[in-house]
Length: 255
Image 1 (cartoon, rainbow, N blue to C red):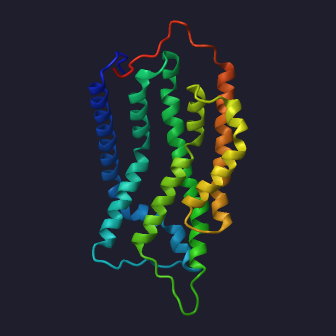
Image 2 (cartoon, one colour):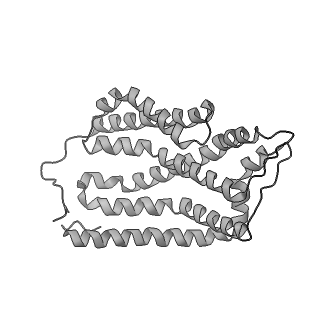
Image 3 (cartoon, rainbow, N blue to C red):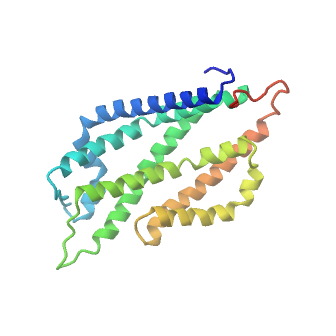
């Protein structure tokens, strides 16, 4: 990665290049996942199917192209999750020229940890949240109303939750870099814990599609824990970090 200062137009060209690489990685990963779209869809929607009855149920397709386009979206979603490391690597490569030399060593840890956190959020949602959400909605069917969910709508809800949990699980990375950049200190972040708890429950209430407290708590509690984890990591790092060398300077600021 070049450390030479660049004009604004060059930064915009660099940004376009990085976005292009992200999209290319996403498309390649999606093409690979499309081959297994049906299997991925079956695994992804297993909690919804299980919630429809003791022996499972069947989803509905009410338009001629619904199955095709839902499988296509499944491949795109799986490709996005698979290409998340490429996304984070390109993000790091774009911001790296503006970092201290001592900070650039975090490239690999940043990509690895961010990717694992996103994947962890998606897995957490699928394994713990989906069964609760779909069981809640299925509980409203009775002797005169059968739940006949369409694959399009169930997949849409599933996608929203996976992306929401994946993004929310990036909390430790956000907290760490806020502290590392000097915007806030770990002590300040710790003092804001009560506000973080309130914000976590508000975010959970907005992102979860069910009104029950159990589902909202399943997102709020991990968010609080991840916030505190980010503070702990930042605190440990800041204690072991010496002041940057006097000859280190910020570089590559837009002109």
